[in-house]
Length: 473
Ligand code: ARG
Image 1 (cartoon, rainbow, N blue to C red):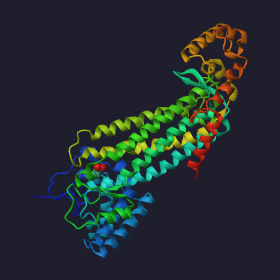
Image 2: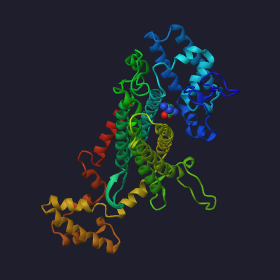
Image 3: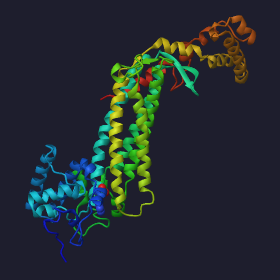
Image 4: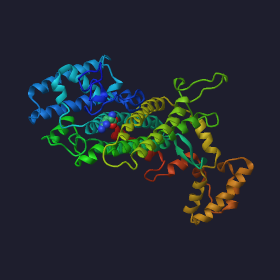
């Protein structure tokens, strides 16, 4: 039986269908090659792949599995590979399927037998799981910085606006006055939780699969703890079968990202609303808007709209990944190769979105007068009037009813509660005194909400101080 087709090299990695063994007697079809290859996207993992290989090789040498000369050759070859990739001179080959085989083949071409010894006690199954975790850990650390910057931008936008009144909404109907700062700090809370979630995900990402080999562990005397230390992992995956098949870390990360993008989409939606002529609460810098090719007056908040829209793809990636894992039997299955593109796109989309939203938020111009006018329009202080009556001894349900009557009269006349004559209010409910005026003002309403977490300026200033201390560089 002929194992080497004419014109093909004897180097096992030079032609992929022979990389596995001499067992294969016919080449892979072009379609199958294209269908199964991942090098088009997983080359992005190259640096993690090289780092993981170097840590593995150092450990193999320390354990006496390979010689010192082999290690030196591997290190020399890898240094050259790094230089080639960084310079854009590395020839990625589809025929070599993925980033791992491409780098290993090049190493062997450069340093010979030492390159062929690198894969001792290792499989691409534990290798790829290690690479993805290493890469993701680096991305998590960058995202953590971006999340802090997002929070800082919101806190600094909020700081001068603890007394800037806007309507707070429920059901998208004017409900009660809140400060613009208080409203913004709600988003800071969301992003703070996202940051916490991310830090928690990182713990489970940062575990070393290498040493699990294909699935069962290996007969070579590997020192997995040593490799974990070299690569900065917090620990070692404790079951070899789980180590090569687990993608929980990717699912968790995607869930974090989806939730974070949902938060972004809510903020983006509010920015779009606030910028519309019907609200007119804010203005965005021109550089975050685009015009219309037909309507000359238009300035559209495209960046905010896209941020809102891109939450869809990140949520979609979570669905894709979780479905990918559903029903997968132990251990590694080729299905897992499909984890990369959604994960990469999730990271890219989230990073760009956080960056651009933080920048845009920092440049928001606030139109206080419009916010105030809107707050005055919707009887936002009706609850304050009811609370006032309760303090004068009326049961809350009766107070609620009396105020509903007052609102009905004011609505009929197209005036605010504060504009109703005192005598008329008193006719509705005799417990009302002249001191009611203070209660009916927007600032009176704001100032009254002194509860922890409430919108009173003093409370909000305390929150700003807390966030600033928490987010200090
Ligand atoms: N490219 C593969 C992946 O991304 C690497 C692991 C391949 N392992 C295997 N047994 N075919 O999952």
